[in-house]
Length: 401
Image 1: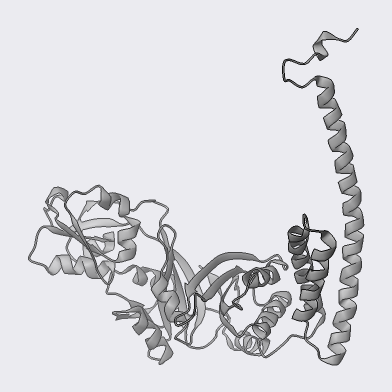
Image 2: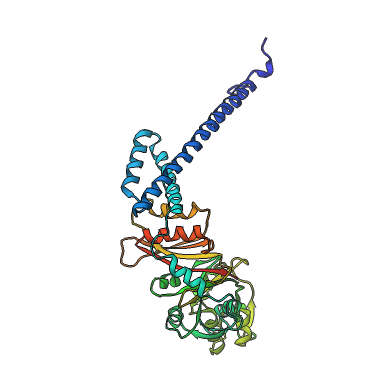
């Protein structure tokens, strides 16, 4: 007689059914493990054959990249896989081809003239980052750029400029040894204006830092929050304080060139119904009072700044690399570029895209990598990218402090 406990409820599953399923899944997983074992052997064998191809190409001075051959391989894979699986096997084989090329590159001499200038920069850069230098920054005394500059170069002799464009120009012309520029905020995102200017100027990133930004609402002494009718600040600061501003009724918000300039304008104005989103340092500098503190959306509010120089300098301790590039305007081009980097186990800590002016929806891509250019494998991979792409700019190797 069958055990009543094994009888299923209406529409239910018996314990025996469950045990049978467990047995089935174990059998399936065992089959997968055996298949993986065979696949691993075949992949190792394929990499060995790729190494033989690399030796052949090296002897004949041929390029690793062979687009016609890759397309033919992918066509054959799709044909053999059948309609149900072809789109999946193509993706797998894209990765296999990228990995094979990465292995071939490791066996080939470095391509192009990419590594030469970098090696010269490493040799020609002093061991210690300077404690003092003439530094360009956008804004006026009290700006966040000033605080970031002093963090990176404690003895900085600051020159203030009205625009980001002027900072680039001051460095490019040799007027200032370094320039400090904001690049992104942890809450409000990238500063597109600076990214767009990178295409137009020759420079090298030599250091970066993250600056904690605590936004305050500043007004003339004695002014209460309910009296304020207009608030001034930089658009980034306005965005960082959007929730606070949304809670104010009937208050106009006006963009300024920077937060320090907004504070100075409030200080010099005859009006008492205005305020500025700025820093506590600016309150002291311009004789204002804090009428609302820490008004940013998130207290973990950091702005990242870069320090740029005219010529490439690579100081010891570099752990970050920045690149600017464009990829061919066709499917999976960006995927292949990312694949070449990720094959080495490099973390892409930032990927920014900006429209390329005058093009049909083409983009310039900015990469930040957690890696040292002193690693030969990293240098080689970037050299190959530089050789493959029509537009590739090495923006710098540096340390974040």
